Amino acid sequence: MKISHFPINLCIALFLCSFNASSAIVTFNFEGFVSGVENEEQVFFDPLETMGQSVTGSFTLDTSAPIRGRVETNWWWWSVHDNGRPALTSNIKFGDALYELNNEGVYQEEYGEYYPYPEEELDMYDGPDYYNGPIGDGLGLKDYARKTTLFSNGSLERTLHLSFGFRDLINDFFQFDEDTLLRDEMPDFTSPVSWFDNDLDTDTQRGGGSLRLIERVDDVNTGVTYPVDSTVRFTLTSVETVKVSSPTMNFSLYFFAVLLFVVKVRRRNHSFNNSNALENFT
Image (cartoon, rainbow, N blue to C red; front, side):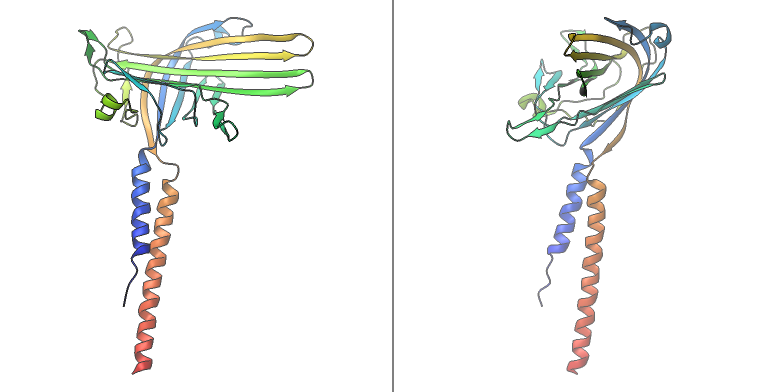
């Protein structure tokens, strides 16, 4: 009698794929406080109300698809991700305001690209020093999102730019492997990070970021104007990786369990049928 091991092998393969993909997504939670407000046009962010407010937010990076970048001087890897599937989603909250940047690009088959373009930036630093100057380990991310609202006489286009970054001369969070150093491949952004600026008066640990909001109005009567161009800058006090997972992992694990159950039932039925056949034969 020949027993097929295909269902079992399929289950094992699916499980291994799920496990290997478990590091595809990493989320960086950050905290800090507003340390600067700029309004180029109308006053969108009130400095008196906004300064000093607590800041919380996160960046979620999907590394399941390769992101092209470049290594400079063996300690700095950078990427301007402006073509391909968007890899970042982010959000920031201060006071009663919450801003979410979900730049879900749609693939345009005609042009072979995603639109709107991601316009994302990624940086990683692997110190500790270069030419006797302190570099340290560090991380930087920049996200972008745009939304257009149509009205009877034209349109309102709102653009958000959210960025953050930190440096650390004490802790060693990141290491560039051979693939990164020799072939410019993306370093491991899923390395665990638990970063705190324990002394805001020194440069051994330093981090910050900004949210820039731009509004463009295209009116058939008044033409194109930019009534809002405002920026909130913040100082970081902590960054922490709180989630490393894959969006398909849970589904694959459930599928794996179901397949195991099916294989078990089929084996039980097969044994039962063989027993009945033996009894009928005797």
